[in-house]
Length: 282
Image (cartoon, rainbow, N blue to C red; front, side, top):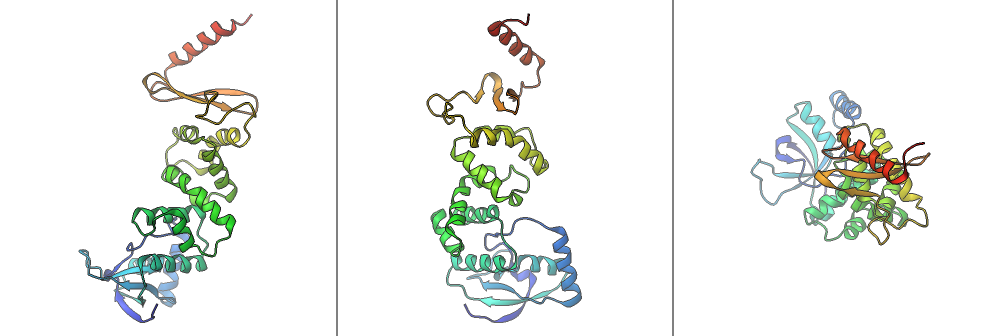
């Protein structure tokens, strides 16, 4: 890549020309950056490349790195921004350069990395997850590479359902991956279903905990969900009513969800059946 510093109008730069790896927001950090630029100016130029043709929005350049710096300068209503004009060999090379620059400045969470991988796959930048991982994160250890590969289906299914998933610890990410691999996807989704996307992360995790407990500590006699002999962990019956068994410290409970779950008649029917099957209390 060649380096040339230019003062480019902010309106000429497309900040979303590449998939972005940094997706979480930190209002305090963004404010501190803006204050620093306001007082001392921009110390580190952004990186851009010249697009093959101007877009309908008037953009002549695509942003490689410096997303937060560009946003801060825009908030400060600056007309231009110092930029290093790069000439990447390809879009994958440009994405890799963006990742490398951000990794130096601040560690990107595994969830954000996999989100970026899926964006790249969706835009046809890489053909497979393995190709994206080996190109974007070539220095990752074998363990970290395996974790990213295992997280791909987890992020595909749960991104948008979990609040602040980029803040999940490595241990929790591994637990989710193991539960998904064990066939507990439907049970995890059902456990989350009563809670909105904006629910507190710990509230969501507490709802998932019983399912994870069962998935990570299976009894030898219990086959995996969906296999022969599945002990009916979850069932959908009439009018969308869903019944899920849940393991607690003191025993099992049945959790009801769906359109009819709040009807008291449902519980009355269940109690009547239990009394009929096991006998009334003496």
